Amino acid sequence: MSFKARLLKLAYWTIPGGIYNGILKLRENRVKENEVRNDPLFELIQSNEIFRNAHKGKRCFILCNGPSINTQNLHLLEDEIVFSVSNGYRHPDYLAFQPAFHCVPSIVYSEKFTESIAVDWFREMDKGIGSATLFLSTNEYDLVQRYQLFQGRKVHYVYLGSPWENGRSSVYDICNKIPGVMSVSILCLMLSLYCGFDNVYLLGTEHDVLTKKKYNYFYDTSETIFSNKIENHSDQGELSFPLSVSLNILSELWKEYESLNTIAKRNNIHIFNATNGGDLDVFPRADLDFMFV
Image (tube, rainbow, N blue to C red; front, side):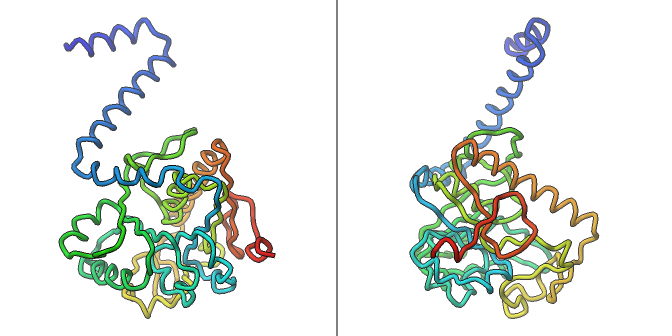
């Protein structure tokens, strides 16, 4: 038995249970941290340090792709700092409000959604997102390098996959491994908290699939590279998941929103839902038009 193992065994019998469990948790976290630091991709995410509190005292808008954004005047965002996501560049006014950041979640490849389709999508995206700084998952790093994608663009990576921490107070550090996300909006929230924005506004985050029985976007999916490639619903938006699966997905998504809202409050950051309608009830509501009166 090693010295460390003997020490832990002794601690088990001499230290109160809560403190002992805390020591084990700290040791476990250090092991996980060392595993990440030994990963070749760890060096890749160190450049994210430039975003730490870089926008302290400012506000930002996270523009997601729900159909409600077709009912809102997005020209109001022209002088604002905007995060766009995935196919957001398909909005006709995209280059008018010119997002500063564009975020893409980790891609899940399948028989329908192949590597070739991902490459085509990234090439289309590169032409559509103007001068936006791009955030991708480290899972896509090899693909970007092999096909020489996004040449001349600022591309940053996030290392997704660590577990969510209940009761966490500190902002997640994007120079380290961060939790996997159920929605790209969650990734954008983690980035905005790291950037230090004081006020964060969500747009296009309806999450109303259970009440509407459909999963739609502001654009027509049949006109995109994604046509017939989306696994969880048809081109018409009808859900293909059983109700039990949808309930579990939304439950986990809500937990992620609630966790980040707790972290935001503990760091004096305010998150608002400025979506026109929808079911997301974790954050206080804000009216986009009223903010610019």
